Amino acid sequence: SAVISQKPSRDICQRGTSLTIQCQVDSQVTMMFWYRQQPGQSLTLIATANQGSEATYESGFVIDKFPISRPNLTFSTLTVSNMSPEDSSIYLCSVQGAQGNTIYFGEGSWLTVV
Amino acid sequence: GNSVTQMEGPVTLSEEAFLTINCTYTATGYPSLFWYVQYPGEGLQLLLKATKADDKGSNKGFEATYRKETTSFHLEKGSVQVSDSAVYFCALNSGGSNYKLTFGKGTLLTVNP
Image (cartoon, rainbow over all chains, first blue to last red; front, side, top):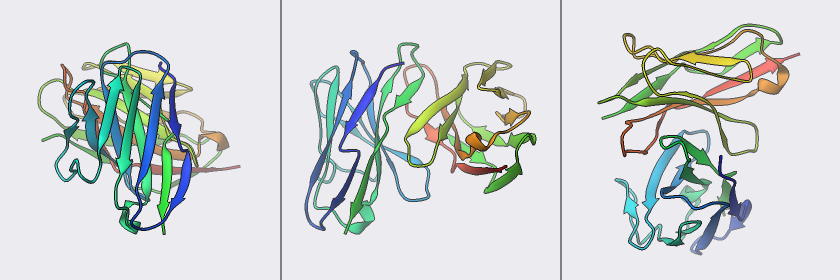
């Protein structure tokens, strides 16, 4: 499986600020995804990060709030904009594995907004 | 649309007890099924998977069999350890070129010595 590194691993952020999370994969991958896990909840897909084009967002998530970049096949960023306490979550980068339909996750970025 | 229903937790067991965490699903097409595990303070790790009916996924003593007739993918382990304490998520994707995962709500397992 691919090795997926996320930065930062944890952060405490002030309300109204924005934070960019980086995701680096040790091999080229076609599909990259961003998920959110709110406290005590399951995971929800935010968007699919498309290389060379705009991300594809799921219902309830918009580009202005969660802009995503994917400049190449090994790297993506997710920005959480104008944060509020409701954005306190774990944000997880994930990639499609070499075996096709298996998805692997990074360690997550644990954000607390105060 | 797709959905996954997991056994409500938390589940508390003694070491060496038998574990079952129930998972049923609703999906179109021929989904692939997964169990992920989240240890305290960590991200998600793939535990096991099955891609077609009657497949059995297994890893670290855990097993789950893809039962199309009952739309289930129950997780089992014959003898749990304290180190198995974690949150377990059942998930599916629709297969083909659709890699979006639909997750269950997760089941917290605590194993006491």
